Image 1 (cartoon, rainbow, N blue to C red):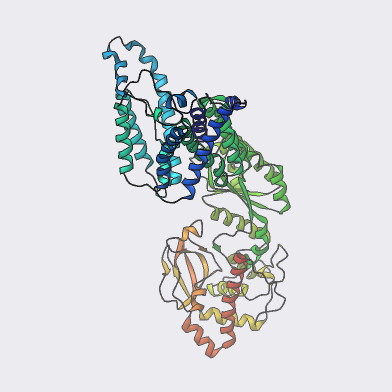
Image 2: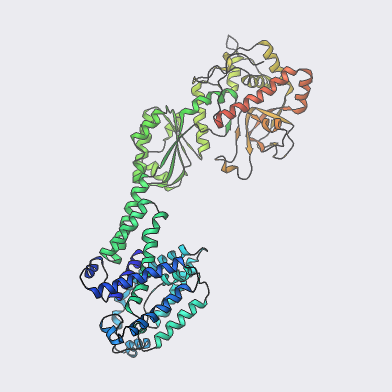
Length: 639
């Protein structure tokens, strides 16, 4: 489009001066001492600038048309007053000479020669040229529509506009005309003058058809500077739009590419220049895309699994050692450079023990990136870092390339627990958290209870659900000695006061234990919240609102043994904000109803306060994990 603007400017200069100006070098013709030449050029430029001023500073719709009508009249008035004849004006180049053999436009049909003597056998050889012409016209038409769209507030129907151009070219070709596209300069010109009536198009079409029938050239009636100034006005306007004003609409690399393509077209020609511009665009794309961060290093992320207090306490510190590498876009050979030693050093500086390679936002990979990721995985495993892959579909091209290049875990890696593959990021984070909990030495509740109830001789004492519930509640009451240590205190080794132990058992007895079958409803969103639950065995799953998938990878939370459900809604006095069901294997949950809590407040206030503190510590720990608020607790028992 910038080249079209320059073409209009050069044509205007040629018509105004009588010289042949096209490329940059041809402008050297004006660098001669010729007062008449400089007068013509100056008048053409002055008239173009005057048109530019009127078009952009005088808002009346008749301003520019009036200038275009009055200017040639004034020229001939001045010529008559000065005593210059029309022949003298033509001899000096102020007015074009008429064609010696004028012909009407319809005379072009004589070229068909009544369809006699046509070498039809050459027609197949024109097929490549026809295809090339088709591509050039389509490309130019798309550019014209894009140029008009920039001036059009309402969106254009690109398909409809292209169809209109196609039918117009069929009609033009069938009647001996040339191929073409929009006269987008005229379209933009009328838009900027706020001419929106269809009558404008009819006037132009009918007027041009009349000129087609007339056996004369209307340009002979207009002075050269007038025709040249109008063309130069269009050229200057288009060049300013696409070579100057466009700078604020694009980035610096894009603007440099725009200017480079313009000069390619100017010096190499339209086809060759466009080809060189496309090649330069590809090169710039590779450079820019390869420098765009393809990996985001994220720490402190948590899964949606809600766990027991001891497990969550252990994860407060160890979660920092879980690093998520969020891969983005299409990982081609340029992005492979980012998976380098620098990234390894960054992971090492973070003290990572578990790394998640998240492919959620990956559109695809090439073989170079697959090999780079394979080397990266080997380097991480050599540092005893556990790896999890997330959001990799087994039958995709990405999975196949990673697997073939040795990046995916083998059966032995999966069996040993040092690598894992998850359907989504939440599952990968949950796998890393389970590894962190094992590393911290925090045993599952059942294992802790078995250890606690084993006699010195090694005989295991049978335990009831009340014992497990008491142990789970105890986790919410003991002091957290140190969040700075990666190893949490083992529940079996803690001693609590007899008084606290008695209250824990009283609280456990006040809670009603319920057993739920697989997928059985625990409570429903919107229902009255008359109590809160503590999962004793198994797993419970939440079903959030319809847009929950925007919050979590799975659209739901997982509540494991030792986690609380409904405690926030219970203390707010609000209905249940989500639906909860038992997991695939069912679950056992202990419910503290509002009635039971009120009864405790009357009969045993200290036990009721203990129940409130259990819920409070659960919410505080969740807040610390999700928001980052952290308070280091001191030693001492909670009573």
